[in-house]
Image 1: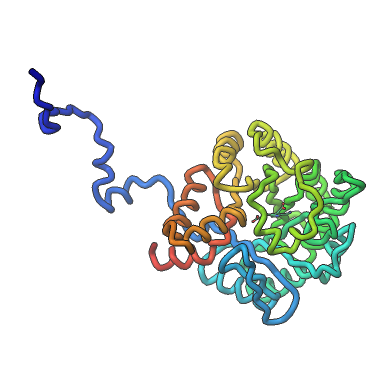
Image 2: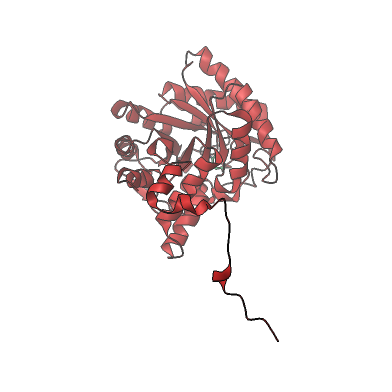
Length: 340
Ligand code: PBG
């Protein structure tokens, strides 16, 4: 003889804690919510290209376009209206202007400098972050000077210092070195100070990994086609985490005002460790490949793009990021304005 199966209704749970109570209604969920995403958290990366009234699509980044300077000014106006605090500028340099030394980086009339001046003239209140690294300007696509197969460190830092000064003179508010050379933060800080740019901030790409997720960005700035080899002798090994803490410690020590972890979602553990250890303004870069993945899946109808976008950005806040560089910035800001 077998016992009849017990009905689930016979079960008496004597629970002290029922975490679902705090989730029972929208008002209750809003009341206990620990993190929120606002427009203040967003930094919008923009690609700048030569010309007038030009917007060229980036195939691997749906809805992202390279903008001529006049269009970048319009984007800055839009950003200001949406309450986005800052833009990060990246140039698509004409192939004819790229050389082994990245000399265009030092041209006071280069695209980024012209964009800075044009934007500041029309939208003075928006923060401008400029990228310090030579890859948009070198014929080999590396962030530094190449000798044989070696990226020279100290020689590169000397050029990066000049690049940073060039950008500061054009009105950049924040210098963001993404090159991963050793010692560049201290060298740039000293040079900025000696030219009187004591208020120009430095956002250091402190822990930047040698990542496959940068592919679409390299399409956008036209370096995928020319890049020789990879960047593993200067960008970090994705296997490492303690090393990120040493990188951040060094950059803060050398005078970084803000630090950044890059890529984003695959490296949330690094953001959390860095935030807990240093309690410094910590930013995350949701990079081009992360953007492309969400957009591609959404376009295939495989996930809800808007929900995935918002969830991914909230995840950065939860991990401890103060803000996020994201190509979704204008779209998210628009949704937040409408009360998403
Ligand atoms: C280069 C730079 C890269 C990105 C920002 N600055 C790419 C690289 O290191 O090759 C990537 C951003 C993205 O993928 O969205 N100095």
